[in-house]
Each structure stands twice: as C-alpha cells, then as structure tokens.
Figure 1 (cartoon, rainbow, N blue to C red):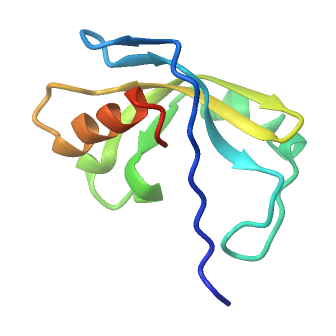
Figure 2: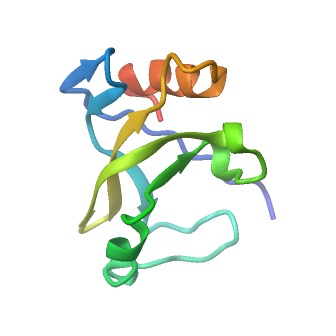
Length: 111
C-alpha cells in the first residue's frame, strides 16, 4: 500500500509563549481512511476520551518510545462530525527541542 500523508492547517486564535498554550484545535483523528487502510468513526472515541484525559499526553509523531517524545498535553478534546480535535499545551523552554519545535509549528497553524 502506498503511504498516506495528511497535513492540516489549523486556525490559530491565540498563542501564549509563557505557558506553551495555543488556542486552536488540531485534528487528532478523522473519518477518512488512515495509514492502515481503516476508518475510525469519530463517535468511537466518545467513551475513551474521559479516560484518556486523565493523562492526556501529546507525543511527537505517535512515538511513545522515549520520554522526550512527550512534548506536551491535550487540554481539551472534542468530537465533531468529521473527527476528533484537540487543544494542545506544549512543554516549551524545558530543554526539549522537540517540544519547542512542535510549539513553533503549531503556533503557525501547522500540525
């Protein structure tokens, strides 16, 4: 199967460089075909989001292998008709270049 790549440009409403919070919603999952050739319906997350929000880790590139890949946390997740969107808070200025770079990209609306 050919690789599937998705890019998103989110609407940034506000950036707080002191706290690492960005007032925008980044698509986390959509109702389109994923890289495994599957479709996960948005409502499938309805039961799991409350449990996930007890430890809402934001990782770089879906990679949980290293502690430094945890670049922040989700402060809010919501389901809409097309998928799941999240509002991020990045752990910036703490000697983690991945978190700083993720924040820079997200603050420009790139996710």
